[in-house]
Length: 326
Image (cartoon, rainbow, N blue to C red):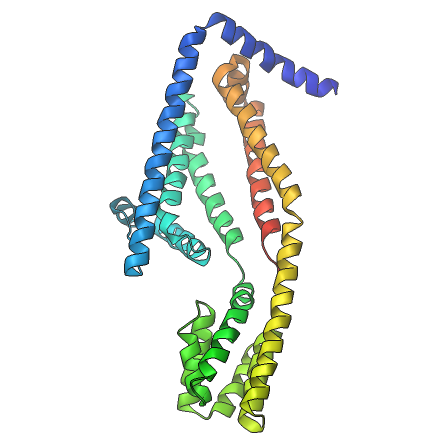
């Protein structure tokens, strides 16, 4: 407790001293101007996102800004953007990929400018490189396992398969028409299966499909279709598919519930991260002793890097905890 008190007291005295020696009206004016600028930027970004969203709905594709096209000329940034685009597409938010990427580039430039301002030239070079490396790791952590995406979309795919079977009797046609109604990555799997059924017999294609995928739900669906090819009638096959859909839906709901139970701990972790960045920002902006310690001493610089690394690591941990496990 004494350690916390001795850590907070210097910053508290620095804040009160700064407010007493400064023009409070000018300070509030600058703060309000900063807030207005941030609100204007956020509104403009929201306008661009809505515009891209409407364009995607009308055309089926996402319009990329000119700035992103220029940035993508650099190989490292292009690969980072493509990985981010994949993550946003799986979440159905590919229209905000450009905005998120711009914010990330802004963070890189701001980190370099901060260390340049305090004349720590080596960190002005290393900080954006380290943050770029962290951004790539964070995107990898955000990527959902393909099996999870398949299991999430499989119940709706089975529903589509049942509806399509009411119009067609041929298994090849049923699988092909179903593949057109689902999203990736399940679309590619079913499309590939339908092509195999055309080039070889449906029975052989389904046997290979069962051997190729270890997922129990895909195997169960293939087994049900195989039983339809052998001796089962359509009604019993559709009933088996409905039972499979219901069981898979319950399993998916259980995984979602398990992930949601961790949200309270995740929210506390995010609150601690925000509080950490706020305290760090106050130390840098209005605490002369803090600026002197962090940017003009080796030990202070080590503490700054360790503190930021801990907060960024907490963000990565939260993302991993919030993901649905297969």
